[in-house]
Amino acid sequence: MEMYAYQNEQARPAQPQRVKFHATGGEYFRIWIVNLLLTIVTLGIYSAWAKVRRNQYFYANTELAGASFEYHGNPRAILKGRIVAALMAGAYGLAGHYSPKGGVVVALVLAGLSPWLILRSLQFRLYNTSYRGIRFIFAGQTRDAYTVYLWRPIMNGFTLMLATPFVYQRMKAWQHGESRFGTARFSFDATVGSFYNLYAAFMLVLVGCTGLLGVLIFSGPVAASVAANTAMAGQAKMGFMLLGVYALLFALYPFFTSFLQKLVWNHTRLEQHQFSSDMRLGRLAFITLTNYLAIICTLGLFLPFAKVRAMRYQLESMSLQPQGSLDDFVAASGAPVGAFGEGMADVLDFDFSL
Image (tube, rainbow, N blue to C red; front, side, top):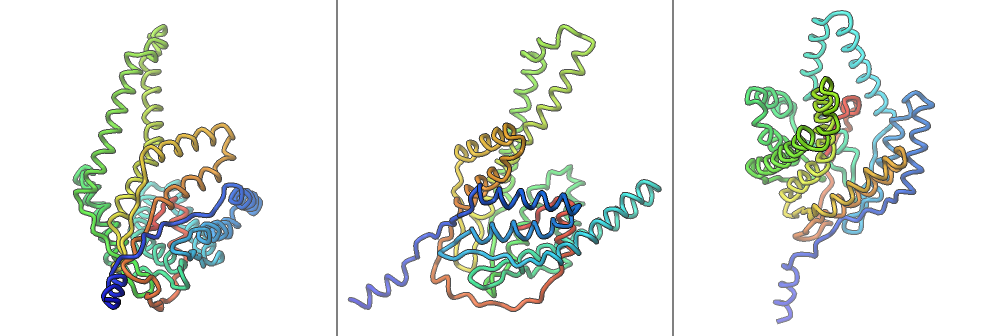
């Protein structure tokens, strides 16, 4: 009887391990303001050290199952990557200035290199992240990177962007499926249909809000306010409409990306261990709205506090359901990768992290 009870206890799944985020707005504000000032004084050179310092702070304050993450990025390596990336961007600008055809050629060369650069960025970011002393690894191949980041996006253009949910689902499946924690593999099982549902919901909300905005501008109080000057009425209405659409996109984007994250992580596993996210629309809306208002009222000084608030909610909405011990992972060896792709990703203002 005792042996039977013991076996049942061993077979019972462990309690869900929720992510904890210990960073505070005050601590990060001090890091942020020093990073900003030193980056300005050094004409951007310190930005690589600023990134490492910021990542180290956030990683160290992200806890899962009693252990924190670590970031090992080398600022000198990141700076070298950014310098080369800046030179390539400068070459494109100069070529386009002196010769439109030259600009097109350079742009095509950069487009041809972009999948490889993204691959290197993913390798660099994962290799320089560890948990419980074990490094993450990205094992994706170059040929697959070109399929995911070049050929499918090009073909998507011929579908008038209707294949965007499919392209994004295949990208996340590749990113997660090729990621490793030591020798343990991640997996991803979200369907293409679930991505189409999310994109369709976002478009319905966007179209509905745009339609309501159009009614208010062209036949509501805004229309009445500009009706006195009929010569300028049409231009004023179009101007208000354009500004309103930009404001809608700006307001809705955090909700879309957050629920996209929820969809992705609810369908991600690490071996037999299942991730999940339970973000709620009401709470997310409150945090987003109050962050925007506080940033405006403080002329931007609330930015670091807003970042910590948003990160805390997104991270602490996530949990891991262990199906066994988390101590059974085996570290895998991996060769260091360069920061060139990481530097290019920063220059282009893209975020390809998982």
